Image (tube, rainbow, N blue to C red; front, side, top):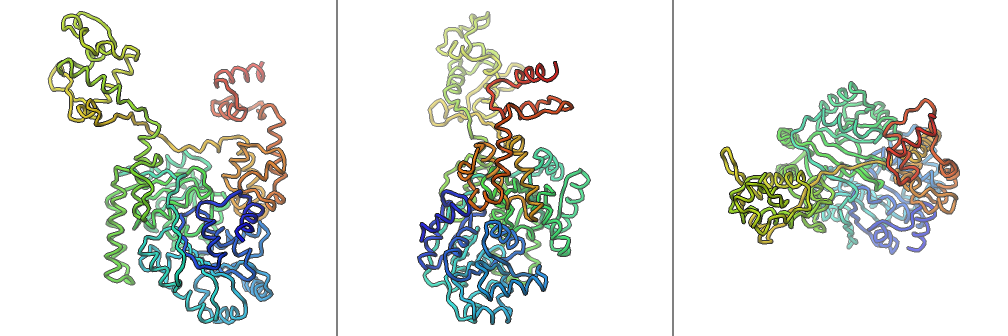
Length: 633
């Protein structure tokens, strides 16, 4: 049956292979074994139960905590031609009765429902007559009081199965579960000898950053303006903080929405729909927003306040980059926010003293993360029991200082050795002169030209070498003496380099870039995607993900067969939209150059885009000259 699952993945979803872990989970359930799967947010959990549901003969129930997730999942499956539905409070009476009739007529293949529905007597009575092949429990950590989002209604799942007298296969899935929470999920769901699959928690496409004690509002505004058109979520700890930040961003001219428990349902739905349809760029929210939200093209998540624990943080941060394209998670940290979280823990009257004690421990771990000087990713993965990364990930703000750096150990040894051979009696200017091999009166008088290190760095430029010496001072490999004529002294750190006990790296700061937003083909494809989404009343990413559009823009498929090789384009998606997207791609192929209107200026940004679109191996200045000669002569 796994071969059939692979065929569905390719023909329906448009992917050549499963992501890591998906095939293991699917094969286990197809072999009729219950399974608990722990896969990070964006790991593709929904496919794990959707594909088996299409293979099994009877109905699959999916217990899900939020209306937003249900709607997105159902919209997406309907786009693929799958008969699916959800039951929740958002339905009108007419819609509800229509779905109930379809269930009774065995027309629905996958049914999403809130856990509260499992206590409804009418629903229980109806399900006694409807055979169920599988029950999928999404966000399974909600069943554990040791998890970060405990919901009592999840405890009704085993009672529901007992009442309807059925024993379907159970697939429980979660993104964030410590070993203790995993044990609790198995116990509370009454799973007997289930398979447990724990994937790597690593989200390789997300860059993790912490910024301590920065001006929050100005930082957020600058960040948003530096990343226009990119959808993002900003989490705040309280409703008041959400309202204040929402108002501030509005004043700054940013298209922003808000979401917290104090808003009425109509207002929450309005903002959420605007966000999922890319009508607004930013959503400011409490943690009430987003659990299970399936918006795949969120490019960044910023936490205005420190969350209560690492489980919450990693799940919320993981809402960025679900499509696998580059994304960023930024935590803004202020010590006073810890006090706010401690207050919220103490105010929770439903928690026992033991649970409160556990929550305080988790908050302390969250604070440790914020103060960290080493790899953020390693800290998170170790917390969840995953030790795949050792000290360096290359994609967090601490590690990025060491990514693509120059190894300058040999250069440092030459500089330090020269200081030592000159008996630590020279200053920066003299040291530079000796290393470059330049002779002057002072050099001759002091006989520095006789040192073995004289001229040893003659192939370097004076400015670079002088700046490098200052760098060695800043990094404490060297130190300067006090007085009017300071001389250089070797430090213990410097001696370690000379003895080959320590290496020297030149650090560089990198930023996450989303250059594809400026690609003219991507822009046109994105415009078409928005038009289709508006016409069909779905979110744009349900038509195609950002990653799919990026691949289209890069590979420029010319026909159906080439288009079907693009990730995320299956037969049904091509039938629905393929020709429209091919038309735009081929219009670029058939023209020598993207069109420039007469009233458009040749800005540096536009020239850069043209150069990239045409894949020209010439400078921007040369391209500008050619364009000016051809357009304005």
